[in-house]
Image: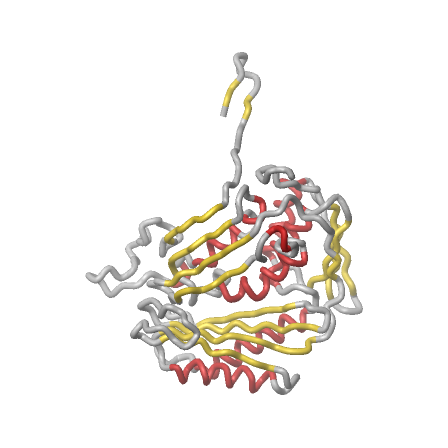
Length: 350
C-alpha cells in the first residue's frame, strides 16, 4: 500500500494467488484458531469430557467452500492437503463427498480442467476420515489453473433422472449401521427407479486400513450419507445428511431413519427442478459472473437465501446483474447474465 507525495492518491498492490503445494491443519472451532471456543465449550484435551458443539466446528468443507472459486485462478496448479473434520457437519458445511459429487462436475462444465493441456481435472480425495467434533481426517484437493473461463454456460435442460449413486460413511460404529442406512435409502428410491447403487465406506475404531485403502479414521464416531441423482442430460443433483452427535443422543436416530431422510432430501431436490442442487447455486452463479463477455444461462429450482445474498454481493463486486425469469410450467427459475470476461493475470501468457 503506497501513498502519493500529495496524499491524494493510494496505490494498492494485492498480489497474486500462488497456488502450489500447501498443507494446512484446520482448527476445530470457527471462533478460535487454537481449537478452543471462547465460551468454555472446548474439545476434549484429555482432562475434560466436554466436547465442542458440532454447530461450532470448522470442518474441511468450510475451508474448501471458500477456496474452490479461487483455486483455478492461481499462478500454479493447486495441491492442497487439509487436515481436520471431514464428516458430521453437513448441516452447516458441505462434506468433501458432496463437493466432489455436485460442485466439481460444474468446474468441467465451465471448462476448468476440461482441456488436457491444463493438467488433470479438479479432484478431491479423502485419505483419512475424521468425524466431528474431534476430527483427525485428511483431504487432498487438486485443481488446475486456467487463463479464463472460455465458454458461456447453457445449462437449461435438466433431463430425466436415470440413476442414483451414493456413499454411506461410518467411523467407529458397527459396520452393520452403514449397511442398514444404505438398505433403507434404497428401499425408498427403488419405488421410483431400479438403478440405485449405494456404496458403504466403513472405518473401524482400530484405525486399520479398510478394503478401499483409506487410512482409518479419527477418534470420533460418525455416520454420513451422500446421494446423487444423474439425469439423461448429465445433470447431477446431490443431497447429504449426517448423524449429529450434539443433537442426536445415543440411539435416538436409527440408521434406517437416517437413510430414509437422505433419500427424501434427494427426492426433494429433484422435485424442485433445475440443473443444479441448492448447495451448488452460489458457486455456479459466481462462475457465470467471471465467464466470457457473453450470455450465460442456468435453470435452478428455488433460489436459496444464501444465493440471494450472493447475487447482491456479485452486483456490488462485479457490477453484474442477473435477469431472473420464473417458469410457471416447470416451477423453476431461469437466470441469465453477461459475464465480465475475467482473466487470470497470475498465469503467464503463452
